[in-house]
Length: 305
Image (cartoon, rainbow, N blue to C red):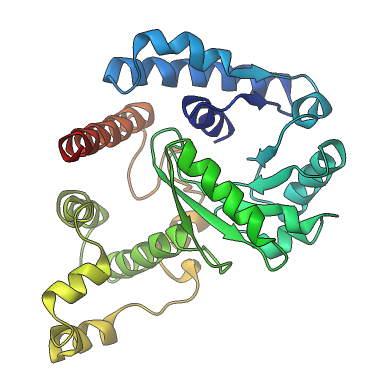
């Protein structure tokens, strides 16, 4: 995520510095950025002659002090561990300028909890980039209880300036992106656990059906279109009453697979057998589909202009 966020900022015209706790991680990040940039150029999303200027806006530093010393915006992408994030951000705060804004790309940890470990909590706000960060336009912006309004406004302006679409979200578990993602997974996992359907069919419903319509119509737009009378009718009430309310993933196939050592792609087995499906090929296909949709959006925006 750190490499992808750095590339997203550089593509948006921002001079960006990367630092990592391990030299190997930093070198891997440079390789991933170079590879991602090649893919963007090949897809026609970045002009070939822009490569030099984008790379010129990216640099690496050997120490955190050198990386954050003159930065106005510092964002961490370490493990989803509150203590680790607080430690890294506190070190950055001590080395950065007093007016620097600190951020985290956490997808679930409370912004308020993270900023409690800082001396200047008013200068902290979550900026949750979704993976792949250099392709997905949406970024959740989540202020904590002590975040100053001008901090939130500055980060939202920065994101817009770099071509992203910031969404102001409440500091609740999962914010909005992960929250709806878990809601969908909970429902489908419950149905799979009951033997009513398999995982592949659920994914097909999402990818070939629901997701196709989503770029054109959100949940509330659909509710208004269908009619709130229909959404309050007997059929809707029957569906809502039948939806899963399980509160622990361990009570679903998600937990059952994990209990037997199956963690998904990482172990080779999850809902799918990843010894038979190529994880790298899957990621390439995922990115290619996102790129295809981005190109469609650009074409539509060009027609509007």
